[in-house]
Length: 261
Ligand code: PGA
Image (cartoon, rainbow, N blue to C red):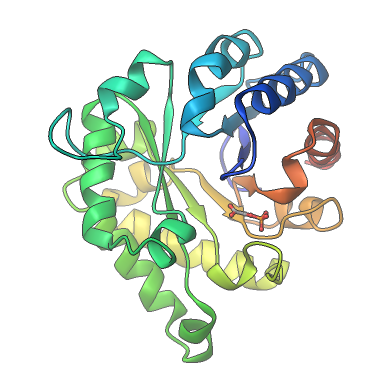
């Protein structure tokens, strides 16, 4: 738990759910979480592009923030295969996920590309969710802190303190912790890295603005480790993959965490 009033719970469904599957997942999640005070818990779901239009009204009705998994950095142009901010706004997107480890390490995105997307997301009124994290090799070589600081400084170049305080979200997702082959970070390790990230954000934006930026932890969060991670100082939310893709399981994690915070 960080120093903020609201705790964040989010999931990115990656390339797993169809339109119909997304719609029923969201509808069930909205129903299950109806009584949860959104001043205390912010919920968000990031489905596939094709599901966004159908998901929009269900998410809005259920007070679940809707996100996109990626975004091109121009309003329009010859960018085959990209989706522009105008298109995402049209379908009610509020959060744009930028630089997930799969985009960086499988699809070759760089900090410079993430930076263009962050600036474009801010210009267009979205909340950018910038994902950062070190690989297993970088961790082994003892340069995790340096990598996190580089990803923040490069990824956030040109962002103002006011924009950061108002709209920026960060997810710390160590690459070695993500997905079926991943090992979740221990509370101690995650807490230490969240400390490094919060310090870098204060350095970039000043203590007052930097201190208002939520930093979420992601990477093999599950029903067993969620409460421990959520109680760790510096962790302002949980960004969950596999363990959140069944609405009841996601709800189970949300209530377990809220009951202990
Ligand atoms: P995971 O995914 O929870 O399935 O490890 C996390 C993520 O990729 O954001």
